[in-house]
Length: 122
Image 1: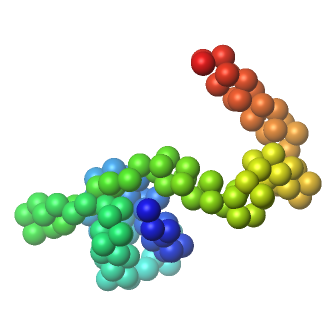
Image 2: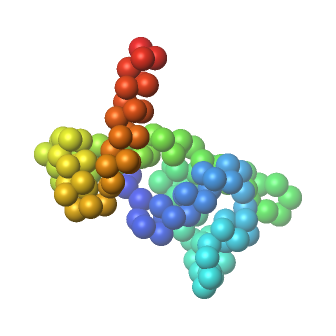
């Protein structure tokens, strides 16, 4: 799976949220100032080339649907991020954010609760 640029990732987030959409619908998701239609069309064309979306022609409009689930993208690139920046240790990553005060004690407790609930399902 090829890494996306920041612009491609933003467009992909909109496509994942819409599930099946045309360029005009993707463009509507952007905040002001919105990029030009042609820019978004070019970004989506790159996503199609990279096999992240599939185009279908309906009338005289192209509609796009994601080929890769958002969860799969996150899993693939978060693993690389943790490997490259935190010596492949999620504990190191969480510790870093706690030290930088980017995560609160309450949020850490929520994470622990989610982990414990996940163990109960096994």
